[in-house]
Length: 318
Image (cartoon, rainbow, N blue to C red; front, side, top):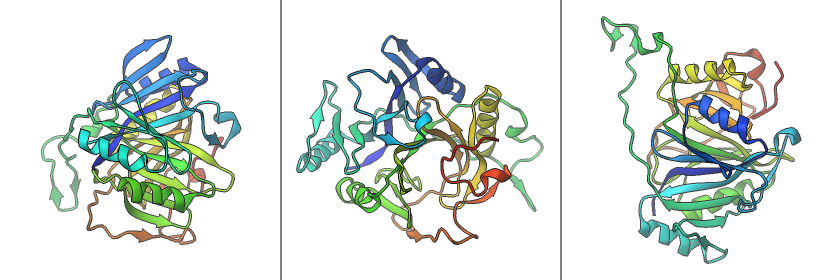
């Protein structure tokens, strides 16, 4: 069974208007709106759904961190699979020890070993293939007789939801085992407080990260992929100009290599804009990193000095 990546995200939000405006400012296409909530589409045809927090049809909220930011949160993550055969295989596997519900659309719904609500559906995504950004460097000139694309500012939009991150206070290994042993995720990198893993039908460095922090629990952030470094900068600058607050960024991660910019999402947690993630396959060697290593743990550079040693998803007033 091949899980391709994030297919749908379902939020329960306290205030629908700013939550919807954030998604539009982020570059998503609004495809439906009404009393039920608002729906958005990314460029690869995957979707984000905002519903009012009191909607009784939503799975319950499972989040415990930053009390003033926990009233809105992700309620369910839906993973896309490659075929109906894979969908049935996942249903059979999970039904061995937990309830699996099938809704009228054929989507499966269950709860993982951390208590987070997850779903599965046959993917409707479309493949997006972009040309590599042409970059000039010392003695090598991929771009000749014309300016770089990044010299002209423009509105940008994310191509896909690349990965999810959850706080897991005391279930780091238990949570990782569920995804690896039951759903076929591949471990990519580890530290004493983090487990990075990728869905087996995806070559991104990670599509899921579980992170241990005492007392913190639940959804932390979702990361959206943009084409390149310039598009991450365009997205972050535009969001700040619209009044949205940066969590941290711009930064360059050393684990996974991404250039990233994180902003607080009124719909729940944090939204990350990223580009240039490591492409990995089964030849990748899983790393084990020490958080006390000052040379390789966290970020290699950060534009804002206050963010260089910030804890993940820490509220910074600057």
